[in-house]
Image 1 (cartoon, rainbow, N blue to C red):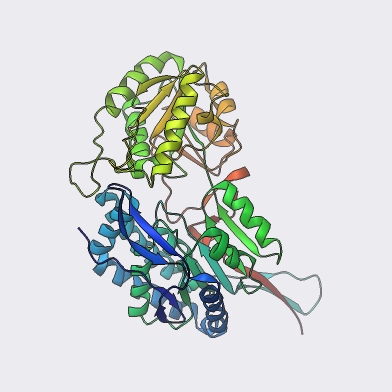
Image 2: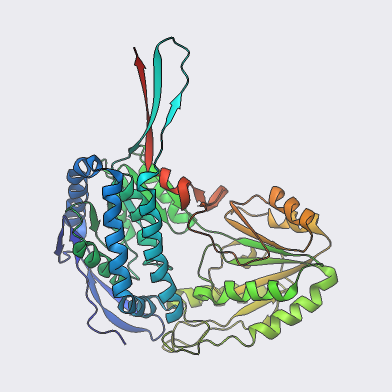
Length: 478
């Protein structure tokens, strides 16, 4: 077990103690305290924003490839410190150690990927209507970015915002979730070791309605990159409107999966098992609503019930465990209430449906519900846990219609061996991502973005990089 967990804020190249209220950080698998963290308070938050503002011009003046070298240094530091960081993530977030290790490795890979863009940021030459005039489109940094993070992938989400922001010449202030501060502190230590210029990266923690609100409403912040719930995203948009600050919001999901009669059911069941065991289903892109063609509905449900019955749940640090805990006791209570509501309205539990008693860890059984309907909370709200709802459908048209009946629009998937069905679904599903015959998990070179209440803007790849820039067009008359 990892010991001596510690947190300090990181501002202008210096570690400083907090000055606000005490935040108690809980290991959700044991419900025991991992230690206390002092809130940054308004003074330190203002100092972090000021440090980022003061450092930005000099940072932007460096060539992009020079900035990229710092990303590579941090990536190298992550790989060296990976065992300790993974243990910390497993303790404070409750995911199994193997997934925490994968998260750390992906973070290093993500930094290296964006470092490669140091020589690839491009503008445009635009044809002019005027004789002797040249038009050039440049991509410029926005300035100071505030990155407000969730707890579900707490280490990877740091680099998902830091890498494109820093490479394009911005400076950044990161606010991690109060649930998972310790891995963010470890990242700040690696930033210091990489000798990143003071003020380019800053780290503060505190409540969303204090530190978060200060970041969102500051006139010295030029972009807010937020990952979290749709409700919080709406509040951030409202706060950012005061200064017309740019927002990039990755919000909730209610991912549908369509299983057609010609699908390989082994592949489909394996993908859904992964969706619900991976981080205990606490990911916005994980499948929640399953629409199965009637010809294979009973067989599919039997296979799913059998497979989910083999999922091993327990201590995230153990080698023989498939699924860890939820993030906190409130999450267990929320899922329990959703199951109770669904059962009262006619749903049947195919498997699972219960959480552990308080004090035994924040665990909830992998759960499959059938006979669900639109009056149930499980079909209205994002579940964010290890639970699926399965419905029979007559054909692809009905499945697509039901899939699109959602206020969310992040990810979707279809399982079929018919190319026409697959491509037809891709063109008709109203989601930012559609996966065919595979698990719902994005690639770093893609573009992870949703529509409707799932967000504005996106992350990853070339398009995620350019989120952190604005354009400047120069008209040069000779």
